[in-house]
Image 1 (cartoon, helix red, strand yellow):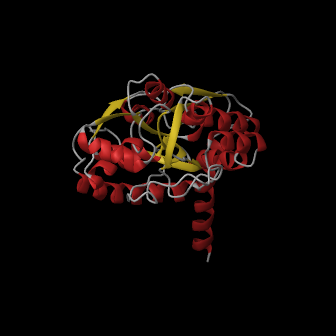
Image 2: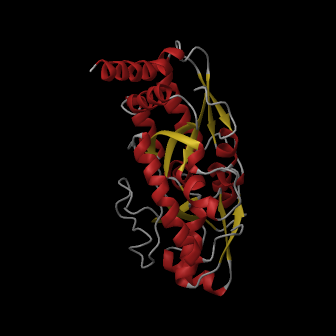
Length: 317
């Protein structure tokens, strides 16, 4: 009995040591890396979340934009940083589960501990208002005759158009941009002919009469545009969805990860955050860290299979 009690006491002490060693974390500013340029949905949503999390963590959260390489620069850098709780990253689904099948990357999901997911993107297919294309069918039929150029900051936006081409016989050629806002401006300026982006990036230009929406590329119609069909309803079995989540480098103490997760979950109850997400066309839904990690693992396998079938693995799209 005494031996068992000693073992229990030792185990309890060992579990308490990491927490005691943390001191009063956080004692200084936290850096939050974002893999997209300033002004896009990924950036603005991260800033909203960070502002709310600051209230609970009592320290400033500084946004570090690491745009480029289809959002892989941010996880590449995060994996190399000190696992001390002061280096956090917004890791979206695409650079974790999609892009590694298409581009060489130096990281895997095992290089991180996920602290949860905090939002799901919506996507819309748009052309210029003076475009001759008034439906997905119009677009597809035109792209069967000659390739159409589309802008994209990376996956999964580009995957949807490549898949649309593969399943319809249409031809779409990609022009890569660093952010969603740059991508939209490329369409407005006539540099590209079609894009797939989020509501907040597209709608100001739709409302100003410069762009026209053809369809939702999400699994469902947009709540505020119930008359607009999905691409799938238009006769083409194509849809995409993507999430945003928080992660830290592998080795970050578990109590810190739990604090970050709880601060994120509490921030997602903040009315200012919820209203901001609604304006941007983001679904304000959450997952815990283990749930998001499982989704990424499963998504990596399923997207690998889909990309292989589409002939998009092992090359720059």
